[in-house]
Length: 174
Image (cartoon, rainbow, N blue to C red; front, side, top):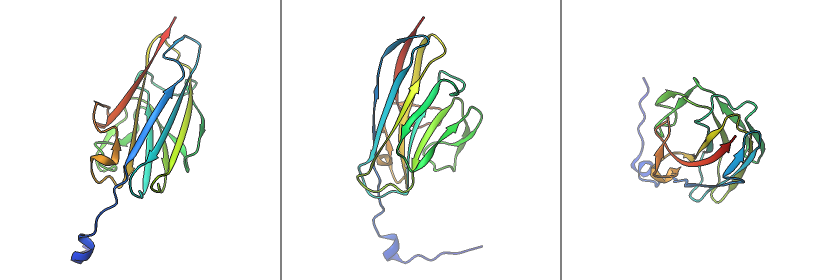
């Protein structure tokens, strides 16, 4: 057992609060089966220095990203990480303490560290293989996750991780 005694001066210091932001541009809101569309995602840290900055693009209407979603370019410090259905992933902004099983695939882009004012992008080329609505869930999380300012968006629809997402839709016609 280890016991830590922290002086009051340390505990009273203000914590850094990274504040992620993201926006996305979709090339087409409607396509025909066999056509592709581009999804360009821009993110930045509008707050204090952070340890980790994650942008997640999830695809709830498909079972696998292979042959459907291609990362065309990115300038994050780490190679994008592919999450597959069944993978164990963090939930509820817990930093990995609470876990769930992924219900749909996603691609996570990450910077480590994330200085204040820095920005990044990731661009996708997406070729749906079925007719109907094709959904994309986007979010950004910064660590340390000190409060609601440490994730974007801060309200709206919740995903399978019980975290807020921006929802984008492209209609795929026959």
